[in-house]
Length: 378
Length: 190
Image 1 (cartoon, rainbow over the protein chains, first blue to last red):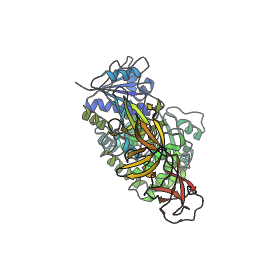
Image 2 (image 1 turned 180 degrees about the horizontal axis):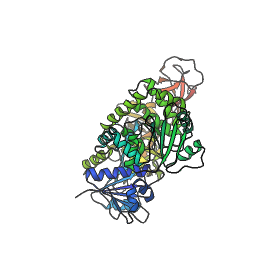
Image 3 (image 1 turned 90 degrees about the vertical axis):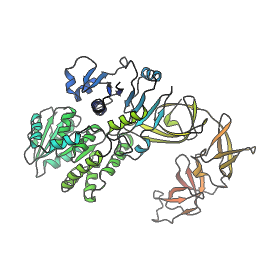
Image 4 (image 1 turned 45 degrees about the horizontal axis):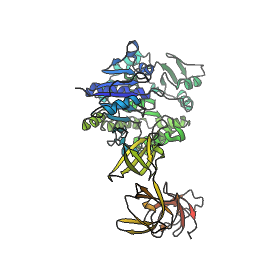
């Protein structure tokens, strides 16, 4: 009998919660043959990242082998699953915990934590968190080393990505579907970020550069800053503006698979949060990360922890401007000078992005480590 | 009930009817303004130890413990011996006092608190601030007088503490026992 997995996703803000849990749910269902039920607090967020669900009217939706439920106070599972994941420390409903306590054997209860590159993660990954009624919860940390749960990476992802990137026809066809026709010598950049005051200095720099740049902006929180820089009241899907050497084009909010292809198509990707941050690494292209801002600048420590890992092996003349650019992007700094310095090191950056991807590919992926964690305890 | 982040070393949490002594508690900021508490616990009934993680706001039932003022007397392998005002002796091994062990030195006069669970001594608390003498440190490298530049120093029991660059061998310093950090230079205890 297939093991039942309930994954609870409380959508707090943005699309990170649902982005991560939806990818994970699909992989657990398709590659490990688990009966996966995804409980989502905000179905509109789910429908945005899974447009195929737009047309489905009845719940639960069955998408990619995953049953997707709207999680409300009145709508929770009527039985406890074999494996229960509370994503990003969301609070499980008390009646559901009571069901878990009645189940024999007790379910495997996992708190899937946030991604961090900090060293302490290894010491906390997989540790128990004893709960009342003999229930034992475990903390499960994604991460960048073998002592963590790894990153979400579907079977054949890198192979599919490489095949796509080796086919100019595939790239052009995809971009054409999005209505994108960059100049042949243009650098193509995707821009997905939170509100960011550092953007203006970067766009200034791109507009005044000798090489043309084409920036693709999927709908999202950065649009208002782009509009400010363009000195237009607002932006909408399909808008296209030119300023000097810079073209800016607004894209619709696209599905996860199309977003992957967008990352694969671009020369440089600006990403944010957790889900797109991981996908940019699998794209094997240079990127910049806008990290989720936290109180007391905690996010800057987490940014440094990742940079420390990512820049290992890079010569100082590449690592330093890269670090400076990322810090400027996350601290409202000036991007222009750092960007130009980094452009001079571009071949290094390209090869390093692919090397990093290869290095991370050797670490087990998150779905596999979850499945193994479960199998060991069955 | 206490939140996990309120649990400190020497607190005892009742988890599923079992009393667990907190040996270590580390607060770490996780994602999106949340945090976790990693704790090393010892079961007071079985003696087994375990490492656990809780969300910072998880609720834990805290057991109120009896406490008696004691002073450190001597070490008699494998136990550290403390005495109260009535010269009752309490013996604790290094695992019992893991969190304060770095600050136990011969001749210390601090008034400590012996902690009891169901009549049995289980650990010792030190005062929040203690005064210790520097046994060894390198000379001032940069002539800094601000106290912002730090260097390593050793206490007589070998414990290493980061102290202000201007501190010298033989100086007395205040240490925060919650963090193990140097606070300031101090006068010799009388």
